[in-house]
Image: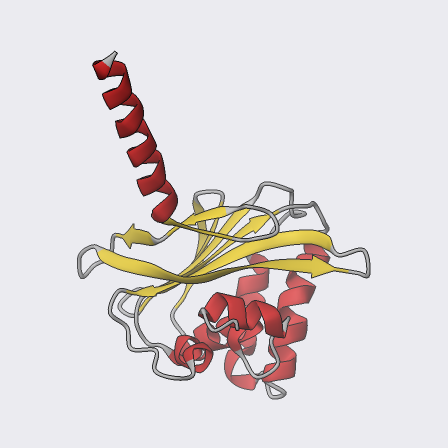
Amino acid sequence: MRQRLALAAMTAFLLAAGQAAAIVESKTGTEYADTVTIPSAAGDQVLVVTGAALREKTMLKVDVYTIASYVAEGADLGGDRAAAILTLDAPKRLRMDLRRSFSREKLIGAFREVIEKNYPDLTPIAEDLAAFEGYFTRDAQAGDVILFTYLPEQGLATELNGEVTGTITNTAFVEALWSVWFGGEPVNKDMKANLAGAAK
């Protein structure tokens, strides 16, 4: 009996510890690890989560995707966390988990629309934006996982369901992509606050 109680207590402790080591998007219950470790040319990089958010569309508030933001452990984000994450020249990552299917054109169009709002002159990033759009060769499917991982010594890698589809080294494009969620004209201001960990 004592062994069973001890086992139950240990199980409860481990479950609690597991829950404590995750951040949860409140509406969908989607969990994201509080840290991720990324191998790089400079050695393993530990990133910590800054926040998670949900993208909804239309008046019916259809769930489109959940997303989590990670930055290098120990990064100084100061008072304006979103602005700091936007311009941070240190390891960082965005993870998107798609919750519905939609066309390739809608996916890349959504990125371009917000980037154009933040960058009226696309000249410095035009070639990179075209290359980035070319990484998406099919329609998006519910359950797809898209990772954007920036490592200063290696560039920005785009990964779809565990497969790297391309890498861009232009840091101006890295900032442009992060502007979709952290820029002056983000896709959604509540998402910006939640991802930066600055929501009231």
